[in-house]
Image (tube, rainbow, N blue to C red):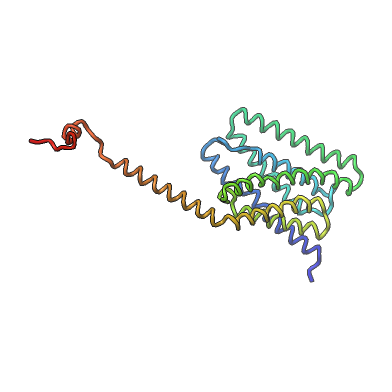
Length: 261
């Protein structure tokens, strides 16, 4: 029979793999930015938010704060590395004004994380108290991130279309949060359970909306394609229509009667 600790390790490894997929999901966006040579209207805010979130979870996973959470530590460190790469790319392809904002926010995030780590480790003498202090910050930041799909879900309900809420990401979100919730229940950890339990609920809600609006989304997308084809045909006809010259007007019938010779 599989022990609870073995099951926890397996779930943690699966959670690491799914979380890594999430961290790498913006790669196509940055490939597009690289090709264009500019960030244009893309926002750096989600990546800065993910960066500070991963930094704080890295502190939580430290053995001095919460022993026995090596799998949380590894995926958090990977997240810090990946999000840092995104922010650096955003920096290089931004205007000077945007670059200054990026630098200021990153510096503030590093100072905040360093203070949180140093103060909790040096001023608090037990693992329980340290994990509670850092954990509250983790819960707050993660709750904000996992509730961010609310705006998209509102748009889905309004338009009756899930076109802008990709199914793979909704499914992966649900699976990822479900796995980490189960992981935290095996060795009860409310800091991991609360944000991931919230993420599981939001992930399920997204899948529910996909089930409701799947048919209407398909109909709307087919209608868009039909409209695009129709417009293309009109454009082609307009291009092929012969241009009228002064000679054409001279030879045209006058007042509905053909000219006589």
